[in-house]
Length: 325
Image 1: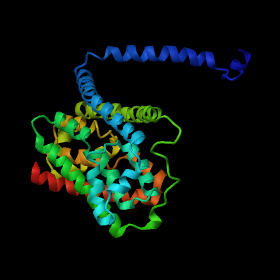
Image 2 (image 1 turned 90 degrees about the vertical axis):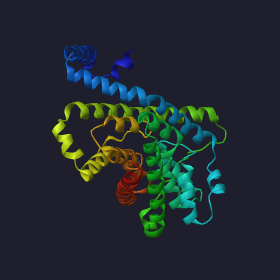
Image 3 (image 1 turned 60 degrees about the horizontal axis):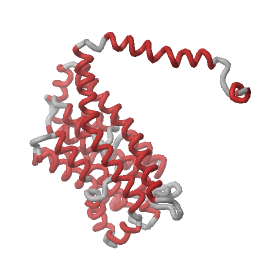
Image 4 (image 1 turned 45 degrees about the vertical axis):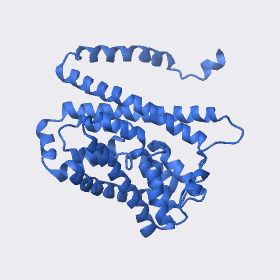
């Protein structure tokens, strides 16, 4: 016991009291305002977005963990064409059947490059896997009931963006921009249980992405309740301002792709094209992805690649939205 006490700060009794009292005080203060109409509306929107998106987040992270544990990276080498220009669209299309969340896409792409996959193809898969997998498309269909054109628009715009970015890397990419860190292991380790690896990967991805889901739901609820209608109308009345506004919002909120359709559906004051932009940009460019890319491939790569991806995603969203929506 003496050893434990020596490891505690001298003010530990005060910290213990604060930890016990402060949450109760906060709950009492907040509880007094729960009957306010604005607070009730905020709570309703926040809970609706979270509850609707949670099953898809759960399924998406489970599938991502299963692929990480049970699908060898060598599968990609066998399936991709030898020529990089043809490997790019094939890798992008692979995202439709091989789901993965944004958090896992960067280390997976790093591992693929380390095992001989052309960087352009790895980057196309990095962008498409979180955006066009079956879980995301199903979530989009449920978030936008009766609007199959929104699902099709998201699929087409995301695939085109991934392919264009892969080809753009082939055309303008420079090896000096790409400085991979030590290849992170993303597959099965010999001697370890695949089920243990699945559990660890699923637990990490779900807890990490779940935090961003809650933050995104809270931000969407705050936006719907706190932002005056006149401000929304200022952006929503302009095609380009609304598109750019929701593109920036997607980058900042960093909502998981399995849940972003429900956040986009809650932004009902904006045009379908603007909400499509939110769903195309978010899984490909957000603050956490930029940080992951910088740590894995280097800051020079992250700045150039993220900037170019954001521009291409916005342009593709506007073109596809104009045609299909």
